[in-house]
Length: 171
Image (cartoon, rainbow, N blue to C red; front, side, top):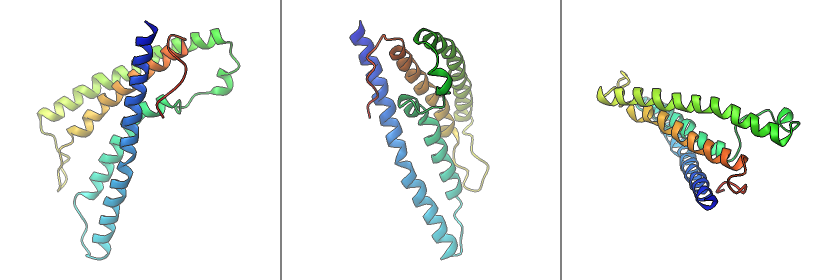
């Protein structure tokens, strides 16, 4: 049974690492879009109608979907000064207790985000700007981010409880 748990945890680590690394590349696209905007404003004297929203949407997706990557690498905020003073048994209990709140949080991301995204998709919701791109792809990033966080949270908890290998994340 342990090997299946290890396979699950390793798969989740690889998935979140792949997503995080892929989204890290969006910084180059965002940089390119900003450079195009600077060029068209400065040299051509004409602003683009799409660069601001493109930058915001790509950055929002990268921010949302990289949460699982941060959790896989244990980079989310935690008060280690207090946590490290606790016994291993108390830490395990605290991990289980806080996991309940974590599940409520990601559950809300998945549920509410799915509802918002689906409604946006059905309405072909745009932004109302002159460019008016569809907003539903960005809204679908919310429940997807929640799902990636939930999977990584479960994998981390299984490791913290000693039910899966400790060694880590696909780097």
